[in-house]
Length: 455
Ligand code: IFM
Image 1 (cartoon, rainbow, N blue to C red):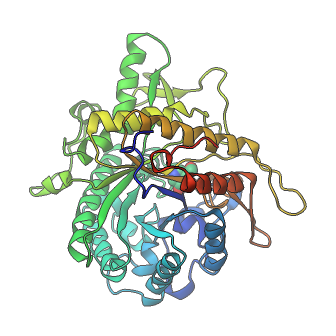
Image 2: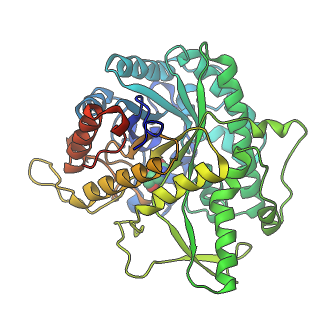
């Protein structure tokens, strides 16, 4: 690897999110979020699972920290629950909720681990949803207030912040497909939500930069997929262009100051809720977080309203327990594409992982060869992108431990550590041990080789 591609402060981390691990749904004044509400909708979540207890991380933070130390990560990507800080999404700060994250930041720093918080990972306070949620412009302003609170409280110690995680999921899956919270199906609402999410990012970034005592590094996390047409037909080629617009360009273009892609504005046929002054949307990013899980192969399908495309399986592909294709070169592709087409100064792989049907032995140990292979192959794919010039500065495995996988409930397990939900015992899997070794070896490697040793 070239020296430019492997700065000495390369981040090796793991990622989690508040709703998926914390539990303690009402403890210390936490208010409800859209996921608490969605879990109560009959049949919305597999097995009727909820986030009431999850991995009990709010109370077992010490156990999680021990796992982080054991793996030897130098950065921990977690999210702060807005409804712990402001139980109704606006108004006074709920001190006990803020104190929890304050303690986490101190503990992480003491352990030599960078705290890398995400301010919004899908858990909008319910009270804001009742006022329109992301479809309402005001939510973006409330988010900026919350970002300012967090920057004032933690900005003396937190240097890097992520505003939002995966606005695609909040907007398209939550407001268009309705498969996940808040469970709505409305194109206009979804397009407006997408706009307001990006506005929230811009206003939130402004608030972080204005309120943090030391100049912070601010970015956003998007989930990207390489898109391929299923055939050489012109219809499928155009379907792939639309799919790419919907999944990738709708987010990447405005985040890089190019405005929303006009072809997609025409496909959606919805006026954007733009107002004078929204030029802030073009605020520069210090880094872009990329979550990569799978590529998408699409066919044209006139039966699919508005978008006119559908994802199809890749023949003969290896797939995970969620039927997601395992395709490591896709990670190289998305990193190189963003680097070349958008020139983003710094890229982080903020999530990458896989769910498998784990089998634990009597001690709770899981010899998860498939996940381990997935991890090694994707680290190699990231290294390949860095070797080819992509400015990749970190890799975060999803996830530290098994957790609540949204509408799929607890069955899919993504963790590098197993969680026994009966006892809440955490046990490092083979993948967790392998990651620990990989990190240790990378730290010992010569600087020019740090991000990419074979494992
Ligand atoms: O669990 C999720 C996470 O919350 C966001 N990115 C994808 C992961 C796996 O589905």
